[in-house]
Amino acid sequence: MRAKVFVARRIPDAGLAPIAAACEVDVWPERLAPPPDVLRDRVKDCDGLVSLLTDRVDAALLAAAPRLKVVSNFAVGFDNVDVAACAARGVKVGNTPEVLTDATADIAVTLLLAAARRLGEAAADARAGRWLTWEPLGWLGQDLAGRTLGVVGMGRIGLATARRLHRGWGMKVLYTDQADVPVADRDLGAKRVDLDTLLAESDFVSVHAALTLETRGLFGADRFRRMKRTAVFVNTARGPIVDQVALAEALRSGTIFAAGLDVTDPEPLPAGHELYGLPNCVVAPHVASATVGTRDAMARRCADNLLAGVRGEPLPHEVRPAGSGG
Ligand code: DGY
Image (cartoon, rainbow, N blue to C red):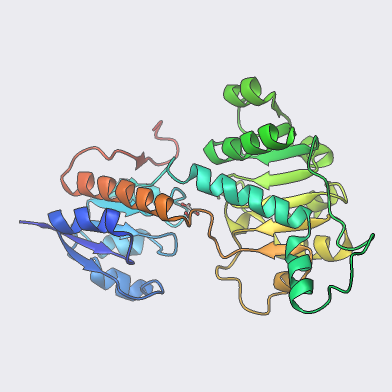
């Protein structure tokens, strides 16, 4: 009998086609996520689920899906999935690491450049007819060459971002992480420091940490006060790592120079939110992995995990619960 699979949104054919060739597939056709009660109903007799970061996979969902063997998350992040609850029920969880590292690092650098050089504000002024002439004091931003980058979370994406900025702009690299990252130290001359030192010494602070109990709300008023007044803050990780009220105040008061965000809390950030109104804040709609090639590769990785899971085989990219040693 073919395995039954619910795919919680249309994903690229590179992943959907192999799933459809091997399984009986139900694809949620809407642009928005299925509401939780609908999701519960659609997975109730499924062997596999393809979830997105907008789908909450929790104990209630698992209880409603007794046949479920695998949750294949179409993302590298998996804070939407209760991995411990899945493990308790013997449900495997997969994610899509590595294939989106470059695309995400590209967006981190793009946001950093745009915020440092006030590109959003300058382009909006030009479009609105506020470009009166070439002005010696107009739209002055921050230089990048030879400055200091602070990477919060030196995983794959933090490292790829640091590589770009070290090799392209000669930046000195500081980072925080639980342990030294020898490849960063060796290749980039990077130095692991405590967060206060990183905030005090960095011209650019780029967040690449996973969302966990420890990182939720990590950037509040006190952390912004510790940064340079010329500092540019970039977040391409997860919105709840930042206290947005504190960030908006830091941007409005000139406590820091500018920010570039690809992630917010909530998502979408509602129209009219004050961060949109601040000229020194660039907000992108969570597009870091949004290239054709990257999304195809994510879809393939997602399908590989899903198909292995429904067959009872080890997942090529399995997420294990914290503390399991995996
Ligand atoms: C992820 O994969 O976790 C990103 O946030 C979306 O690509």
